[in-house]
Length: 455
Ligand SMILES: *[C@@H]1O[C@H](CO)[C@@H](O)[C@H](O)[C@H]1NC(C)=O
Ligand SMILES: *[C@@H]1O[C@H](CO)[C@@H](O)[C@H](O)[C@H]1NC(C)=O
Ligand SMILES: *[C@@H]1O[C@H](CO)[C@@H](O)[C@H](O)[C@H]1NC(C)=O
Ligand SMILES: *[C@@H]1O[C@H](CO)[C@@H](O)[C@H](O)[C@H]1NC(C)=O
Ligand SMILES: *[C@@H]1O[C@H](CO)[C@@H](O)[C@H](O)[C@H]1NC(C)=O
Image 1 (cartoon, rainbow, N blue to C red):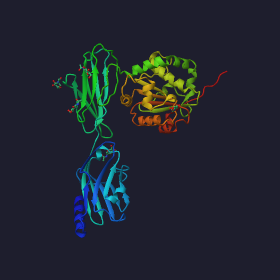
Image 2 (spheres, protein in one colour):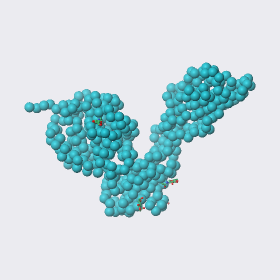
Image 3 (cartoon, protein in one colour):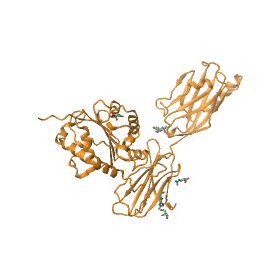
């Protein structure tokens, strides 16, 4: 028999027997929530329990679109919980706010909302006085908030490819306007993520010699990003890359070859230093001293984490970790002209951000901005975050890290949880980073042995 019919019969039966009318009312008939967030849906029942131990049954069901096969989300009978089954999508994500039962509230909390949590929910409450239920709608959306911009220019052609990408739900179209508010033809590609979100990418080809502004607009939520094409006199770069937030003020083609400005910073501030370190360091010996977790020698190239990967380089004080970090920085900065270019190739990296953790006073992003003198290049830390998390061609190199600075540790933890395809290499003394090292497992740790002293 249909669940609704059973309930109707049950309620008719109960109300015939009992005196005062028992009712369940929904706090709201519908809830609109965001993907990944929590929602609390409430049903109020009256009269409330006279004594805390009176009989009480609460059931929350999700009604599938055909409403033929209701799925138990959460149940409770006289304080005994009936949790969702092992294969239920709600497992581990639901709880009843039991403290509020005494006030006549049967409130269900669903955490880490997914798109497919949307739909109709039925809350059913039964006490010694009677039984009733209500149906509540839940809709889960993922607004297109963060717009990632990318621009590609071909060296010889008078053409630039402008790309905007964002992730959300439901489907959105993307429109482009130029500086004169004319609508332009663009292409759109949509893929579906494992979380059932839409990853929407729109591309527009424009003439790079013509000065103009182009704005992409994810119409469902109105999130947009603007490209400022400076026109023919501007310097060209092979692959400019920059990110921006929905209301973007990033001036795209003038300054933000972040990679180039960071390289310039490295040549200015550490050129001589790095050479000195290199000279003092027996590079020949390095292959023997750099080992994997099984004690086998590995090449310098092994220091480059894969996209999305975090690696640790551990070594006792004096083993030369900072020198190795300088080698990476100088190799990236100098490219093919570097003395170790035959054994170390970092040309896949568009960006290498070196942070000296022993100097760290603020959080991760404040340190990057300060240490690499990016305050003039990038106005908001969020932009930097977007560039880093959106790129597989970026390496964050944290040198001499030691856990213990709260704001730095917390910001790093947060970054690691959203780092996307960014690569991360941490150098540290053994035992200085127990928490973060645990997250990579032994495969993610390389060791640098102390050099053999020669007389
Ligand atoms: C582009 O936008 C900038 C800043 O909003 C504005 O100063 C400039 O006049 C615009 N250029 C064109 C060609 O629309
Ligand atoms: C946009 O594309 C359509 C079909 O491909 C074409 O008919 C239309 O003229 C184009 N509009 C502009 C402004 O290029
Ligand atoms: C709901 O979506 C999640 C991913 O967000 C997926 O793992 C799960 O299988 C989906 N469940 C159903 C019933 O579609
Ligand atoms: C984006 O599109 C929406 C819907 O068409 C519109 O309301 C909004 O003003 C647009 N935003 C921008 C920045 O053009
Ligand atoms: C933490 O900050 C202090 C100075 O405030 C510094 O001496 C120390 O090296 C920092 N440690 C890390 C891991 O950043």
